[in-house]
Image (cartoon, rainbow, N blue to C red; front, side, top):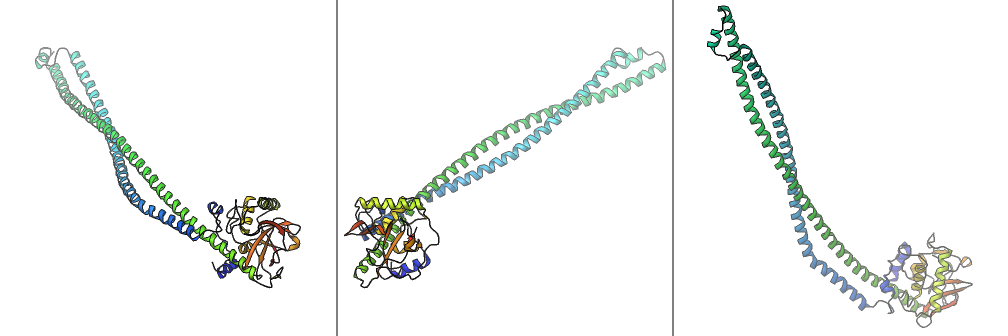
Length: 402
């Protein structure tokens, strides 16, 4: 990453992504080209695996499409069966109503026949013409009886015909009612079976969808993890190279100010820490120094640190995490903290060193301990130490509060 790119990042206040914990424990000075190439191979392997599984996904998709067709067909059959059942119920009800009506007609005809039998009994004997003639008391009586018999005969014939018709209609209606009831039972069973098929198809479809999503999610997660690891290595290497280059340049740059004049550089307008967090960050830095942890380019603990790695680890241990707090280099931490005059410095504030007084050429960062002292990861040769804030040339004219 060029100085111009870094300067652009600083101008717009852009921060880089946090580093993975795997890289944070690296024992090498910085991620090597070989490590990055290995990460690229791992990413390529994940991509190849994804391509290989594409055939499985295609098969699963086809199966899902087939199950969708089956489910749709089963649902259609179920809806059709419901309609057939509704028709069967209506027919059965109509047949039952008709059967009840014809049965009522049979009852009515039965009552008429009963009345006729009663009248015949009252007249005596049967209804033969001879019997009427023999029992007649004179012409007028004979005429009256013949007229009565004629009426009764006509009524009898009509009643019997109605009775027979009603009885036949009742039998037909009963048969139709029985048939429609059977049809209703068949339709009911058909609905139940169609619903069972539809439910089974939907369950199979849902299961296949779940399997497909699981495979897709795993592939996406694996690819993202491999890509993120590779990008993290590349970013960490570039940050380490930049600080390493600036630090090397600083040792060869003559006429550096002990403290650079204030050129009006600004940073954040707000802070993310409080006194408790800053106190804990100082305690963490002190613990690493007293444990004589080694200085390694690009390392951010827990076994080794570089200057910005110690700052990152201290505040992360104190409770600041991504996205509020990321692993940056010294120059970017200058932009990401609020400017604090030396007269207002508090333990936990950050101090910055540049070989030419510019932000992009800041090469070192430390944690202020109070009373003009600081905790720092100094260099490979010196290691992690407790030192005076003016012991290094090129101090920027203001501190930074996280």
